[in-house]
Length: 77
Image (cartoon, rainbow, N blue to C red):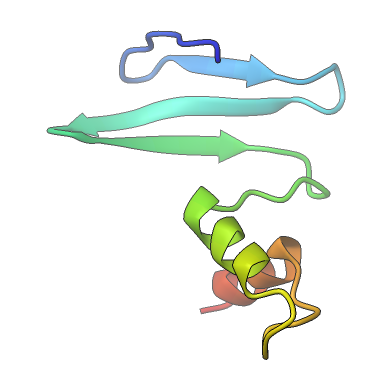
């Protein structure tokens, strides 16, 4: 795991030209950090705990719901 330090307003860029994902530190308050994420439309952005829940529920009533579908459902709320 690569660990980097960033201050408010600073960013990281991941990926290759044309497929870049930019993470920007928007706010730091106590033990919470708010991140802004710019990613291509075909890139799924999902909190790790939601992805884990979706994976654990494979084979249950949520069968067929991928992390991408779950993210789309949650973004419509």
